[in-house]
Length: 485
Image (cartoon, rainbow, N blue to C red; front, side):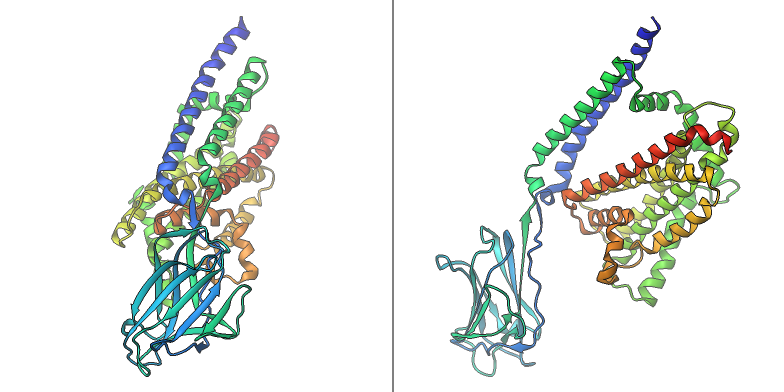
């Protein structure tokens, strides 16, 4: 009879959890598809060629002069070709034409005419495709630049680099092959394979979720221990105490403070103002919309610092409660992270205000930044479990973490652009979890585009890995806590 009652008591929260997870997954899949837009299946091509530095002019493009550049590209969808010009530092007249040919059959792919009078020294003319051209990946192409009416002494000249040479590239000036390459750049987009098969991956994810729920159900029916179900039951059973602990932490932080909770609103703004003055005027940080760039970094790192710091001491500071009242010990660091999450939610208000004040145009991709913030929350919970365990057995953890968190701050591009780091130090960013959360959140808000699908998977795996590691270490050591409190 007891076994039947236990099974029935476990079945209800398990059904609720299973139904909630499936519905949440389906809603997230559809919402992500609508918000990600074309960035789900298209990305800026990695095969784009940069503009070579110019060291010489080609020919004065007078009537009858022709500059031809044969080349291949590794862009799947060609959008534009830019050519750099020299004007001999004089006003010019006449017109110049740019035409792109497919050398396989000699067909004209695109063409455009430009007024030489509008070309400036070192300026660019851009051959823009009406629709992106596809099927030209590593196909031999010819860019032909000519003029039919420019007179000597009043014509511009396409620029070239005489020291470079690429395979399958050849430059011809008035029919004579010359060493070097034309100063041109190729821009376009590539297809993302995972985005093209999005619904197949979504279906596979749903299948994995159902298998996971089936395994949990099997363990429950077999009378075996299920950590997932026990965690759900514990959250339901102790939800009142969780609310009380969160409320206590939140009130303690602003106890006897005149401004109270308003500090959660004011603190990121003050930090942003100080750092903005320092880095935009003294150090001349040349970052578009630096105020918002900086504030996103400040808000996210402040949450990381506060959540991890509060979770670190969560077991020790609740020692008297742990020894007198039973409840799952992981709830203590969890409530500290939830308390910090409330402060983060308040801190998002000044971020929105600064975005509106500086003219940031919110696009639908801005909603996706919440995904990376959620990944940061999960990461902080895992880190908090790890730090709180270490703090019980090794009290110097708090001092070591103070130094480590400061080093972590400077290793994260919060107030400086990542481009200032030399190539030999770029690996620091790649192994820095905060960098990935921060970079992708900025991309959603500032650039108005969704990151590649791989970025979502990468951040999810980082957050999940931290949570599993922290939970494993915490679980293996929690029974020893009372001996060291």
